[in-house]
Amino acid sequence: MASGQEHDAKFAAILERSYRQTAEFEQPIVKPSWTFPLPFVAFGTSEESSRGETCWGPPPRTLAELRMYALSWAIRSKPDWRRKAKDATIMEKWREEATEQQITLPKYEKLTKNMINFTLTELAAYSELANNPLGLEAGPFDAIWYSDKLITDDLAQLLRTEVAKLEDIPDSEKDWHPGSHDQVLDLVHPSLYPIMYGRTIASTTNTTVAVPYEKSWKIWLSDDINAHCLSEKYSWLPSDFAISSNKPDGVAEARLVSPYINNLHPTTHQQLYCVIEQAIGAFVPLFERVLSQINGSEQDLLREWQKDEVPGGSGRIKVKYGFGTFIGFDRKYVGLRVPCIWASGMRDRGEFETNDQYLDAIEILPEAHEEDNGALKRTFVPYSLRGKTIQCIVKLANIHLTPENKEYAGGSWHVEGMLNERIVASAIYYYDEDNITESRLEFRVTTSPPVYHEQDDELCSKVLYGMERETHCLQSLGSIETKSGRVLAWPNIYQHKVAPFSLKDPTRPGHRKILAVFLVDPSIKPVPSATTVPPQQSEWALRALLEAQQDPRSLVSRLPLELIQAISAELEQVEGGRYLGRREAHEVRTRLMAERKVFLKAREGTVALSFNMCEH
Image 1: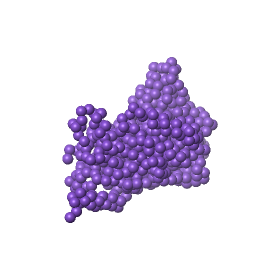
Image 2: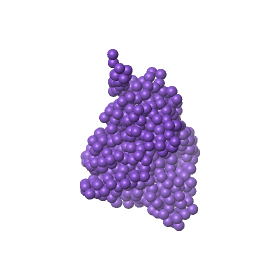
Image 3: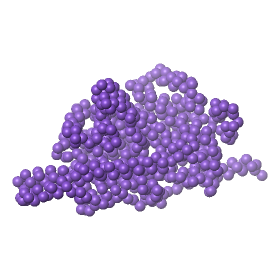
Image 4: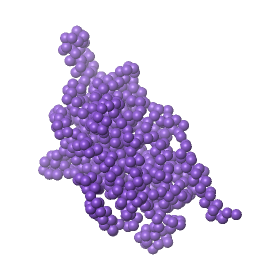
């Protein structure tokens, strides 16, 4: 008869094959229409949880791999890093510095020789994926891209000149963002004059715009989340831009297809329209890089994360797909993507006199492959926007500091928009700054809970993933300097926030100015846009009426003056109709922002779920 040990091994092998086949062949009943991951959509149900919690992100990366990313980013942030990476002497110096700088760290925080060597040899892959003529560079983590060369000096100056027309208005008319303490000046903001479901009229049907809801969402969204991430009241209004099919590797040509950009008058700011078209054309190569690294449905991504070759979604850390834990009422087998820190079962803290002794007892730590194995290139599945019509939401805003108000406290963690707006990526051009300290944009991501390596083994989860009991399943992805002239793009599945900054010289004012473009998922059916939704600004309608009344070729000029005056008075005072006056638009914005604050609060507690280790 076979020994008990052999029997256990055979049983484990059977369970492992069953687990892998389930991961490989299970398909959702209805596949959603989107290709790219969204921050509002569940990635699946946690197989590691006996409670079957909804997962709102990929499996977490090990801290070891995140430290490898940090080392790589520190090197790639150096001037002329690409040339230096080809110099064997400099590479050896970097290797020595990386080793020396972690001497005082505990062993579970140190990068191994393999990790350092993998990171250094991977630099060649980063160089290959970049674009030298356009200055495209990979940022601190996958799918974050930037360039300091995309926008020419002439275009930047033209942007500053044209935006000055929006800034040069009486103080009483300036739109300081609510709650910003008169620091954030909104010049063009999508929360003003948004789509109002059930009220905003679509010109193609002459009926009100309906919430774009998909039946398949019921599978991917739980009922308690629907109420928070899907707005049934408001939506930001994008404009459509046709992207040229020429110059496949260069700056694209973008042409506005829609009649207007929301909150930017097409006649008054005609030149600014041209600048925005050129800027969006320049953003296209960055957007393509971002989309190429998140290309694939959630189910495709999940299957990859569950394979040996791509543990945790990357392949940098060696995998050990062995015994896991029997959990839940169905006693489902869970495989381990990385080795447990204990070779022969969890050690109890009570066995050791000090915490240092407990940590020193750790027997196994993650290990990387000896050198670059193509992990970075495997994440890159080229996606082109050339020849497509894309939908973009445009925003222009400034941050102003004064000697009386000289510190910007920083922003809050957030993603852009809500589910119905379908924003898949963001790009920001930092086109002007003066007299401010270094400013950075920080990133983090929501993950699923880590695999239980053994029941209630909190130390293992802390050492491997940086997650402890009752902490949110979030991982930091690093930050990047947002210096003047830089264009930065990233996927909307990453949360981001502006880090604090202040005046360099506290005796005089300073500012930072941005052009932001939010890209609607280009793989889906177009959402309602400025192509199908006429302007809702009553002042625009009034201006058009008065201009038509002055034009002898217009039929409006034949109307009696009394009728023109009556229509004008109605446009200025109307509420609840097709058009909004400025006062009502601000009231709508207040309600829209309140709704999104509820979403952000709910998301913090639900999407970024807490890592709770069950007592089985």
